[in-house]
Image (cartoon, rainbow, N blue to C red; front, side, top):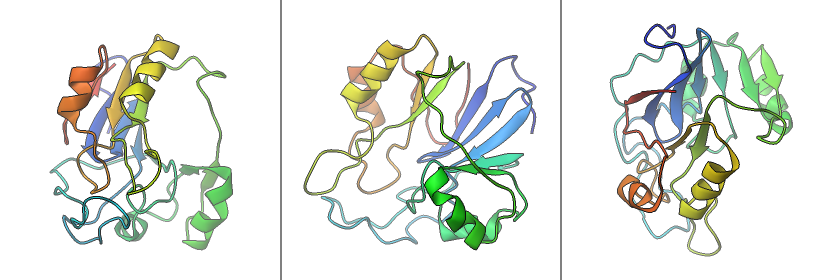
Length: 193
């Protein structure tokens, strides 16, 4: 899959944090969650006991050149993804999780670390949804976090990881009402930067 529609980067939100990001003709599959709707247990210790994912996988071409896994929570990398992905796909991950991917059978694991302070990104894609357990603060970005990133960069900002997992309590509608100049795609929607 190449970036033939526009000159800049583009992102297609698949569902939750699963996205296809195309940069300079290379398509990255980010945080693959391939489980069918309702086949995973609810996230424990949350105010919502619905089975995950809450929504079906949309009919999107999942062709990719490489995979990025931000972290190994089951809503970012599940057993179905581990089974469906080619073992030799370039897989970018956190350094602390590289050995686990090798143990899963992946042969081209590439640990990386990057921050907004070190790089001048063309686009920023955030995990929002204000995912929360019954106690403590949200573990993913909420309205204030998204607004802070919006202020920290001139790059376009898009927010994914919303309305697909039971502990994500911030809706797209609420985030749109509380922020400005932030892209909040629907499942299956492609955005170009």
